[in-house]
Image (cartoon, rainbow, N blue to C red; front, top):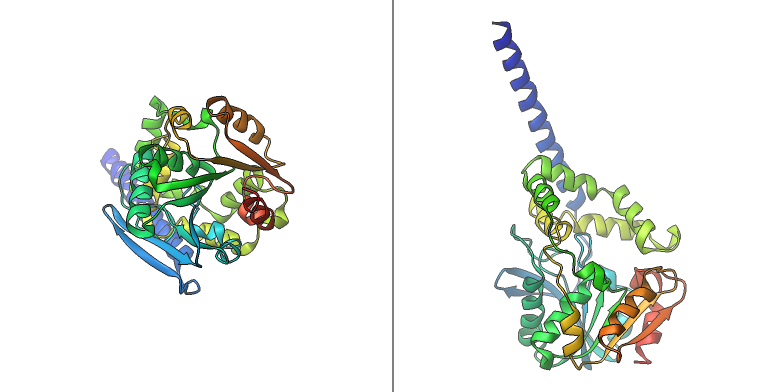
Length: 315
C-alpha cells in the first residue's frame, strides 16, 4: 500500500511540475511578444513554398539585398541603422529568413539548401533582376551557395564578419542527436530554449562574442533580439535545434573556387578571428578583397554603421 501511495505521490508531483513548466513556457513566449512594434510602411510579405517571408523594400537604384545573421535572435532589425542611407542610391531589400524574425517558423529541420532556395527564389520572384548581396555572420555561406547555383542572379557579394571555413564545414555528431532529442521535447526542450534566449543570456553572448563595449548595445536592441527569438511560439526552437546541431552548415570551398562574382569581406578590428577567416577565404579565391573597420567587433551594422556606409562607397 505504501509503495502504491509513493508512486501516486510521485506521479502527482511529476504532473504538477510538468504543468508548471508548460505554463512558464507559455508565459515567457507571451511576455516576450506582447504588444506591437512600430508599423513599417515599407514592409511586405512573400508567400514562399515553406512559409510566408517578411521583407522590406526602400529607395531607388541598383538593388542590394541585406541578409541578417543566421541566428534565432536575428532579423532585418540588424540593418535598421544603414537602410535609409543606402536607400538614397539603391533599392534596398531586407529579408527575415525562414524561421527568423517576422517570417513564418515551420517546425522542421532547417538545412543550408533550404535557405539557398529561399534566397534564389526571392531574388527571381521579388527583386526580379541581378542584385548585390550583403550578409552578416553565418549567412555568408547561404549567399555563397546561392550564387554558386545561380550566379546570374547576383553582382557583388559583401560579407560582414563571415563565419570561417572551419566553422562552415562542421557536421552533426552523435552528441548532436542527443541534443536534438532533448530540444525536440515539447516541454523540457522548450524550457531549455527559453533559458538560452532570456534577455540576460542574449546580452552576455553579444558582449562576449559580438560587440566591443556594453554601450554599443542598447536596451532596444536586446528587446528586439529577445522578441525575435520568441515570435512564432515554440516552433521558434526548430531553427535553434538545426543551427546548434550543424544542419545548416556546408562546405563552401567549391563555391569559393567556382564563382566569378566579386567578393568583399568586411570585419571589425576587435574581431580576433577575422584575419584568419580572410586568409582561409583567400586560399581558395585570391581575388577576394577585405576591409577592416575600426571600433567594432562582429555586430558591425549596429556598432559602426557609418564605417560600413563609407566602405561600401569604395567597393
